[in-house]
Image (tube, rainbow, N blue to C red; front, top):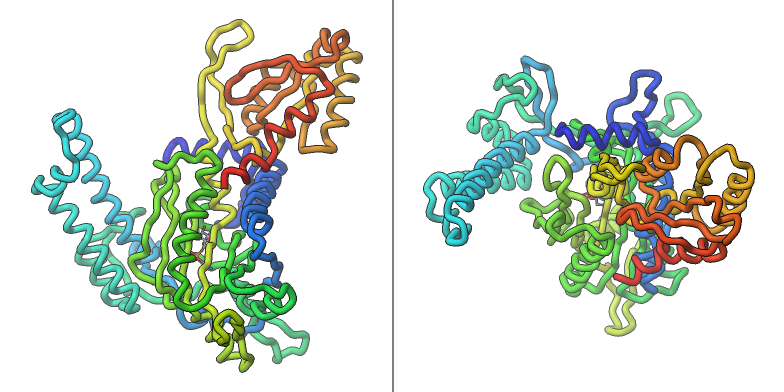
Length: 515
Ligand code: GAP
């Protein structure tokens, strides 16, 4: 784990964002609890997603389907047979890995060597340096790149064809060692189903196997006609849903990046067959815009086309974000064809067709899906927001501060009200009055403990965009000082305007307007 990533994880704990699940029992791997600020940030991310998808699209409606679904659902969707990860064990360390992840990490290592050579050459050649030409002509670098291509292509083939032996062969040929022990003593690669199961039924011996949903999407597919009929939706239309999903991940690590219980925000867009690529491109662009509207710089985001398509998709792309451990998938946009609806039609025996009055035809719609992990989005935001900078202290000397520069519309607490000093009842009373009024409009905090400088630091560390300080002048002029978290600018404004100013600056309205 990189130093900065370790700091983010401990910051999350120290400031009540995220705790290890069941910590008093030494924790449960890959399960986390969101603390007082974490739950607020999570709610705000969910709200931003919901409003942008449902409120801003008059042809998208919401759904909240049950986590438990009829067991046939998962046979129809292909999850019982095909929702597997290829796993491999190291015989010496007894550690278990995903075979494809070991190979991807090998590729990343070579890519690191390429990047090193490129930046060395860029420094040496200065303005004459042409990266593409260098990559083609430098024998070592072009060799690395060919190797990456060859390994990637072979891995994609093995994954698409389910060739487990091929994956094992590749790991051995590349002499990939166990990252923990360095041993190359591997077992064969085996398939491992990722669904958690439980049982339904009160009669002993008659229990029925149930699965905890591994994606929220299937709840949308099985309700496709219910929603279409009750909303009189006309194609193209979408159904959006947020909720928990569960996967028995072989390697669940990197904090909340990969968990066994997590939350998804998914939308299925039902379209006329043949029009799926048009909508796939629309959603690919819209979803990127959604990330950029938060102020995430373009260089921190990129598209990554899938090398091996899932069994249901005819096109798929990831939006990747540069986490502290490198570029990784944040969101997926998939053109899922009519696979899911057709399979549910087949397994349930119920028609799942749409009558398109424009062309006078009934058909099973095609589906374009956008799917983002709420927890992963949380981590992306936090890792970008977490910064250490220098600010002047009360004596004007420069001092370090830890600050979460979260987008104000998503910040857990929008405003903190601080009496300049604690033991002056006239100040604390005035500040309490202001606080009691503001809390009707947004999440705010009252804090009177410690020096004003310390309180500012505390609010910076939880990412509060505005602090309002009540001082002795406030008693005379009915005005307060408002301090901006990122610029540290301070202004004097009338108390009567505080609510309007903070509401205006932290409202989701401006964020949504950018879409
Ligand atoms: N319905 C499509 C689907 O589930 P996916 O690529 O498997 O596609 C979608 O998952 C998103 O869910 C991912 O982009 C990621 O953000 C999130 N996600 C998937 N597995 C996760 C896990 N184990 N922990 C946290 N987030 C996860």
